[in-house]
Length: 302
Image (tube, rainbow, N blue to C red; front, top):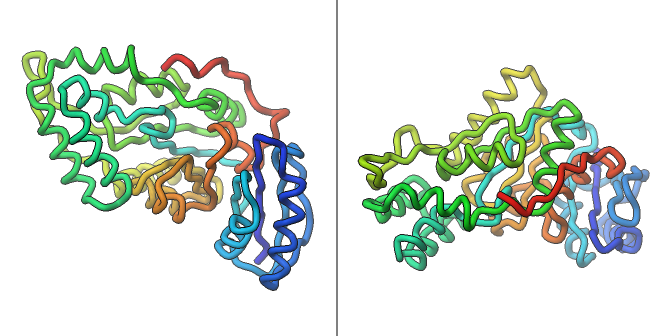
C-alpha cells in the first residue's frame, strides 16, 4: 500500500524537509515512489512505498522540524465532499464555556475541567454537566457579550470553508458546545449546518442544564456517518478537523482526519497534525493547491 505523504510549511521549508524525510524513510525500509506537486516551497506531496501510514508519519515527524506532516493511504486520497469541523479552539480560538465562566467569576475552575476533558482525562458528558451546572443563574445576555467581545474566527477559517464549498463540499460545524454560539459562528464562517448542545434558559437566566441528547464524541461521529450516507459518499470523500479528545471518533471515521493545534490524544488519532499553519493549511492536507483557494476575507471578526 502506497502512502501519500504531505509536507506543509508556512515558512517555505518543504523542499529541504522532503530530502530529510526521504532519507529517514529509507532508513526505516521504505522508499519514495513519486512526487505530487502542490505549492512548493510551502506544500509538497510525496508517494511512499514500503511503510504503513502511521510509520511514515512518525518517521517523518521525528526527522523534520517546523513542518506539518500528513500521511494517509494513497488510494484513499480523494477530494473532500463533506467536512465536519469542531468549533471551540478549532474554527474559533476560544472555549465558549470558559468565556461564560469568566463572566460568572469561575473561569479558573471551569477552564481546568474543560482542559482535562479535551485531553480525554474526564468523561465528556459528566464534565459538561458539571460546568453547565456551575453557570446556573448567569444572565443569558452573557452569551451575546461573549459573542461580541471574545469570540473570533481562527485565521484561515473562512478561506477553508469557502474553498471547500466552491468545490462542491458540504461543510458542517459540530460542537460539544452550544447552539447559541455555533449558530453565529457557522454563519460567520459560511458553514451549511451546525450541530451542538442546547442550553436551557428560563426567565432570562441559564438554568444550569442542557437538553438531551448530548452532543459528545459519539454524536459527532454519528453526524459524520449520517451526513455521508445522506450524500451517498465514500468514506474517502470525507474530512474532519478537530483538536480535542471528543473529536477522536470523527477524526478516525473520516477519510482524512486532521488535528489542528491539538491535544496529544487527538493529534495521535489523526492522519496529520497542523501545528504551524493556519486553518487554510488543511486545504493543502486535502491536496488542494493555493491557486484554487477562495479569498473569503478577514477572519478577524467572529
